[in-house]
Amino acid sequence: MNNYIEASEIIAHLKYSRFVSSIKIIVIDEIFSRSVLRLRCNLLPSSYHLDIRFIQTEKEVIYSYQLFTDHALVRWDNAPHYPEIKTFPHHYHNLKGKVEASPLKGAIFDDLNYVLENIKNILLSNEA
Picture 1 (cartoon, rainbow, N blue to C red):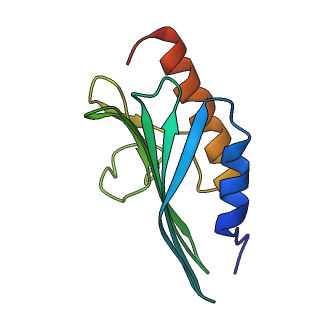
Picture 2 (cartoon, rainbow, N blue to C red; picture 1 turned 120 degrees about the horizontal axis):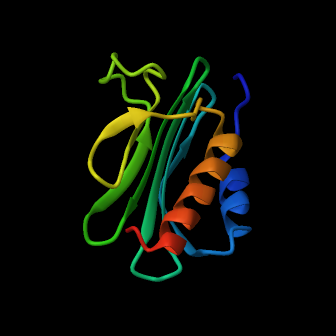
Picture 3 (cartoon, rainbow, N blue to C red; picture 1 turned 120 degrees about the vertical axis):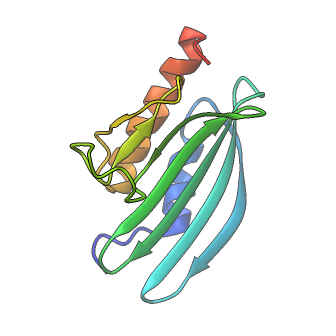
């Protein structure tokens, strides 16, 4: 499997984030040719949460990162439904509900670092 990353590595990476207060494992299903991971991270301040979903196969990583409170705020994902966006299938649903290009590539640790940094900036700017 190309660049396969185990769920335990992703969870350990999240634990180093200063504003992730807890991590709830919703699904871990790892077999030889496919892995499914769904996590809910409680953030600081405590009214914010981050849902993370990965499906890793031998060919690709399908992902979704969604920041929410009692409703969705922003989301990065690579569901193939915005072919007009130059970074297709990678895209970002911003705070205003608009869909735009995303720098994410399906490289889990690089993408996760980018998402966490952007969420931190959103929370610090009080935009959410």
